[in-house]
Every structure is written in structure tokens, then in C-alpha cells.
Length: 173
Image (cartoon, rainbow, N blue to C red; front, side, top):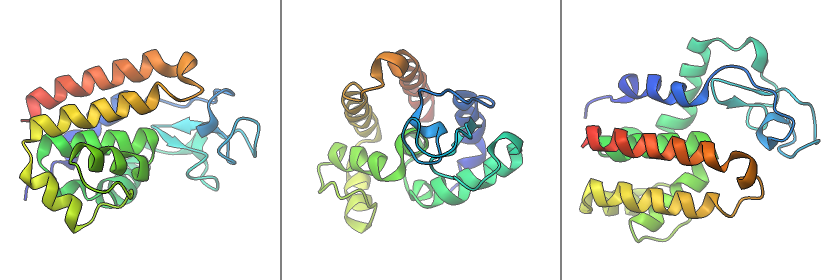
């Protein structure tokens, strides 16, 4: 199977941007909640809540790319998915965590949503049309996000991100 990660990383990093230390974003805190732990921020989308011991401010682009390949692309098994689905899952995993993104994928594929991408999930994904799966995945994602307490602060940005991803899906198929 072709390694699509190199072609996806630039578009993923375009969503993420540079260093940010938004006090209202729970991901910027080492404790994973606003005001809990240290405010270390986020850079290239690598967040303090997930990497509390990492020097976020001085993280390089190459270090971020290595983290994305190891901890998101490979852990979420994106390398075993159709191209269009792989990017959607990668972006969802980066934005909301692998477990949550896996549950969106599993619900979209109509399998048990345990948050672990295993043989049953992969088989279900292979049986589905990738276009249908991308639409269902993003429907799950949007429904989830509208229920988050920080939706009023970040919802518009999340919707723009998903809209861009749907445009990418049209190219990826």
C-alpha cells in the first residue's frame, strides 16, 4: 500500500499553525483542563495535555512530523485505510484524540465503537464505499463537536477545518 503520510502532513500542519497558549483551550494545559497544570500551549498541533513533558514552545517542525507519524498515523492504522478515509481519521485523531476519532469511524462503519481500530473495524471499512464513510465520519465528528462546552469559542474554526477536509476528500478519492 502506498504511504500517503508525506502528502497529508503539510495539509494537516496547515490546520494546526504555530505556537499558541490560549488559556481557554484545555489542550494547552498539562492537566488537560483549563487551569489544571502548567499552561505550555500547543505548537504544530502538538498539545501540552497530550505531551506534558515536551518543550512545546521549542518544538521543531521535523519533531512534530515524527510525532504525528509515530503517535497518530501508525497508532490509528491510517496506513491500512483508503486514502480519503486515512486523512479524515488522521485529522480527527489529531484534533480530538485517537480513541474519539476511532469511535467516529466505527459508528460510520456500523461496528461496535470501542475506540480501538482492530480487524473488525478494518474489515468493515474495506466493505464500505470510501465516499460514504467520509461523509458519515464527518457527520459523527460534527455532531460530537457541537456538544462540547467550548463549541461557542472554537466551533467556527472546527467547522472550517472539517469543510476543508471534505474538499480534500473529493481530491483523495
